[in-house]
Image 1 (spheres, one colour):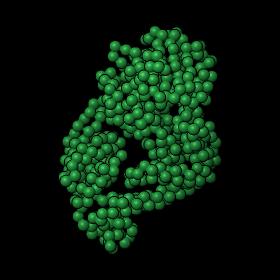
Image 2: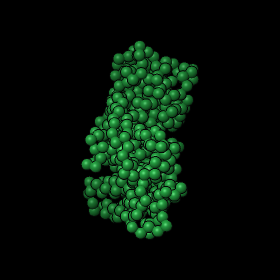
Image 3: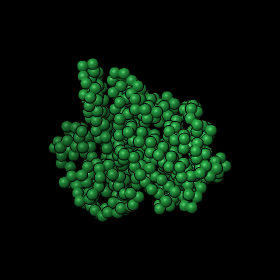
Image 4: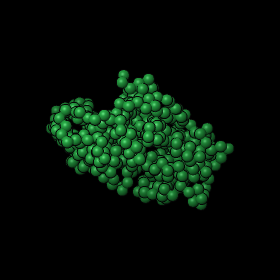
Length: 469
């Protein structure tokens, strides 16, 4: 895919901020080869690929500019950063700065063609009149068209390869089929990443993703799991039946769909989700063993799988566990499952919208002070500003010495494109350790009360927050 941005060779001092193990790190370096989409930093910086950082730079004549970036590679030429979530004001300021620094173009910056006629490339047809007031708008429209055609070609290739593969299923080994499907998917995901690199407008990206999903529905709908995460049969993303399929780690489809199920179940995040439920089970067991008659609140409880194996500890501790969810089917499923254990007498199920739990006074009215508050995956789906209010109110609902257990998916440890393109599962937000710490700080939770742990893949981080006695 051709480069669709104009780079400026200027060098600017920049301050880099990032979080590592709950500690803020500040570095001073130089940013160069700057475009609207990214830049290069000094190769001496020790930054992991996919790490999210914040760049603070002073643009002469345009003032301070703060950019969120993600490390996409590190090489001898420097650390390559892709700008993400760039707002309109920052984009305009950055472009006006770059425009004033770019020399007149004597060849196309996209394809290298020297034939430029009236501010347009004679070969690729793209606008090259950098100084024109409307250049940025025209350029972005051309980029969208370019990416749309690029996506259509990538979609055609994926469909053709999958259909070809289906004709040899009977004659091929399962290991080879799995390997080949992963290769086809990986090839497409890399192309999807390039499209996301070029287009910042989320609504346009959403349209492109929907078009891809419509064109490939006849392929991926053969998978029980992919069909669920594309159609949301319970009316929302990440419903308890979808998660139960991942927990059981058992493909439910036939033919090509079987292999799609298998690959999804055994993806990094699929493994992480199974590790998460086991880790929550362990945390709760420890809490039950060290507390007497504890009050425990399970928010957006889903299927309550984590409570089944620790039913003896629930009974012996005489705990009182309140499980809330807005999905009546999930509550009925959880009740039926736990009714076969001796712990059912100690568990209350309540239909309740967890989105109401941002207000402390309302929480006090509807719930008693709690020894333990937890949620298996709900917090990932909440906007950060709302989550700040919720954490603040939940922390206040804890008894002195109580514990809040919060799990988050770390976007630096998995490929979100798999869930945004192959599936329609973008409800869980792409956040990093930097984001999580920022949320907890803003929620006025003391940093010294927080302990972090990761499950084995590293894709899910647990924040164990203890309220001071």
